[in-house]
Amino acid sequence: MLMLKRCARYFPALFWFTLAIPVAGAQKTPIEVTADLSDAPRKLFHAEIDFPVSPGPVTLISPEWIPGHHMPSGPASSIVGVVFTANGKTLEWRRDDVNLFEYRVTVPDGAKTLHMHLDSIVTRRVSQRMAALEWEALMFYPAHVPVKDIPIQPSVKVPAGWGIGTALKPVSGGDYPVPAAGSTTKFAATTVEQLEDSPILTGLYFHEYPLAPTIKPLHFLDVAADAPEEANLRPAVLAEVANLVREADALWRGQALAGIRGDWVGRKILAGWQFTWPAMSHPG
Image 1 (cartoon, rainbow, N blue to C red):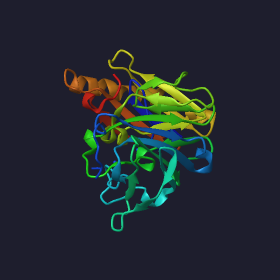
Image 2 (image 1 turned 60 degrees about the vertical axis):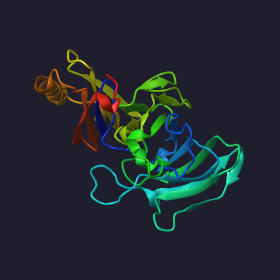
Image 3 (image 1 turned 180 degrees about the vertical axis):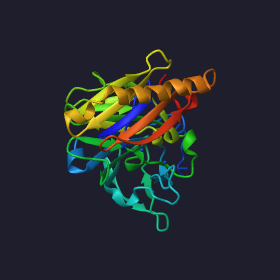
């Protein structure tokens, strides 16, 4: 079972890019990334990414240093099936000779958008009925630009009937947290820095539990499991988690605390807690 506790809405214990590019409005127009998790039961994720660009050489990078890790542990070795296109034509690309996290491609004249398709082989936090997406598995962005300054708008597509839990704020896509089959859920634009800290929990047996409803902003605990009974948390467990919300509110009341989000992984194993703040663009 996977579980995520969030303020106002979501994530699990599972799953989280200068351009040497003549970027005129690239820092204002967000990168658009759509994560397709439809093949999660096959341990495959897919992504379609659109970068605002100007003609000329471009260097993109996948996350190399992951928060909480003490070595370069990004998913470079898991990324396959990379295809770049612009103006309807497939472009040649290559990885940097030294830094294998960097990808180099030349944008043709007249192109304003560079499209990238990629696949990611997933070996952890995924099963036949649930998955967690940590965005480094599918995220690319301009190299040598501070990630806090790079806007990005994420979307996600999940298997039919699977629910979605995340701290991201949905802005379109219809039904939520269990979207219609085949639909894509779009979230509000954020930054690369914040997206890395906003994983997605999804699963067939998905449950959203409100916590301490008198505390504002609202908090929820999202759970995904391999079996329906594993997603049904005992009242005593929920009461203990709700107390964490109340205690945090008492400790930080009047300060900038926006919410607490916790992740639950496997069979009722609390994976960790994360405090979130308004500057991080979590929903309130």
